[in-house]
Length: 201
Image (cartoon, rainbow, N blue to C red; front, side, top):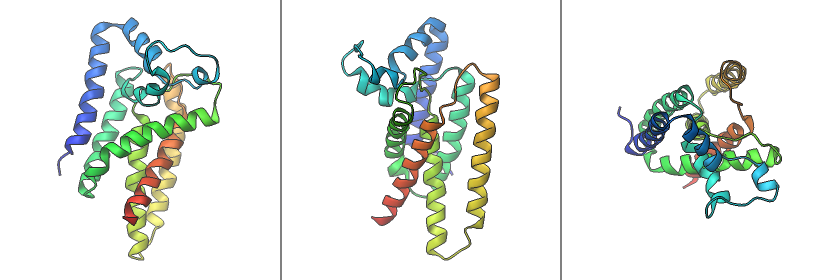
C-alpha cells in the first residue's frame, strides 16, 4: 500500500517550507508566522493588510508553516499514516478537499470561539485532524451499514480524545507553543461531515 500522490505532494510542500526556514534562520520563521499565521484578533480589530488579500489567505496559509522541526514531524507522521489508510479506502480523490476544508474549518472555529485571541494558529494539525475524522467516520458508517459492532470505534474515539488531552498538556509543557484545541475540533468536525456527505453520493 503506497502513499497517494496528493498526500505526498502536501507533505513535500510543508517539508520544503520547513527546510527553507531552517536554512534562512529564526528571523525568517518569525516573519513567516507574522505574515501567514492565523490570529483571530487580526480580524477583530482594525487591521491593515501587509499584502493583498492577506486577511483571507491566512485562513489557509497557516497550515503550511510550523513552529519547529518537531511540530512538522508530528504532522508528517500523522499525514503519512492516515494518507495510506485513505488510499486503501479508495478515497484519494477527496484528499485535497479534506486538507483544504479542514484547514479552513479549523481557522473558522478558532475565530468563532476565540475572536479576540492574539495567539497565532500554525501547522498542518488541522489537516491531520480532518483526515483522522474522515477515516474514523468512514469506518463507523461502514460498520453501521453492515450492522457490525461499533464498540471498537467507540473505544478508538475515546482513546483518541484521551491521547489528545495528553498531547495538549505534554506538548505545551515541552514546547514554547500553544495547542489551539478549537482549531482541532473544527477540523475534526469538517472531516466527519465530508465522510457523511461523500457516502450519500
